[in-house]
Image (tube, rainbow, N blue to C red; front, side, top):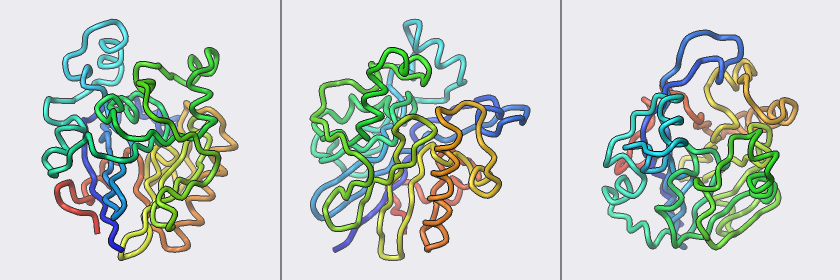
Length: 253
């Protein structure tokens, strides 16, 4: 059995550094990643990047997001176009896994309309609770598009063979999850926003904005344990690390 992994940059965002490392000044420019997992029993995506409306923002919300986060997102960088360059038919992707439901991770969900959406149940519930939506920055237009839902609770083995496993890493949001992918060389952990940067993991330097500090620290402890067991860690938005990651259509090996 061969599982292949492909990494795609779906735009860039520039934000205040303190959002990622509390107490730090200045700004940080961040890649917006999405990943394709090619499994013998189907293809899966981990996160979907930004909504195409961010390329030419109109409306109060999109204009506000583009200004606040200084987006760089050109036509051809959206998920569907990136997949097309990999000769992947987005309409035939079997699973769409969202690490969580923020605009830069679930904004492209509407491009993958035929896939089953795999989200932690507590994340989906929070993203439909008026109070938690407001406090966590959720917006229905990013993620609620009528997908067939698979709302999982805790670890979830996507293909039933241990090769692609959702790992709960709560804290950044109420139901954040990371994804462990087993390649020929060993395991890779796609952390999403459970671990923004290498410094987040090495120094336990948390961001200013998060849902639950204790849960995020617990999740980072779990990520450290997986790293100690041999997993390669793919940090969620680390531009320096991202330079070392082959971009699709090249394969991550």
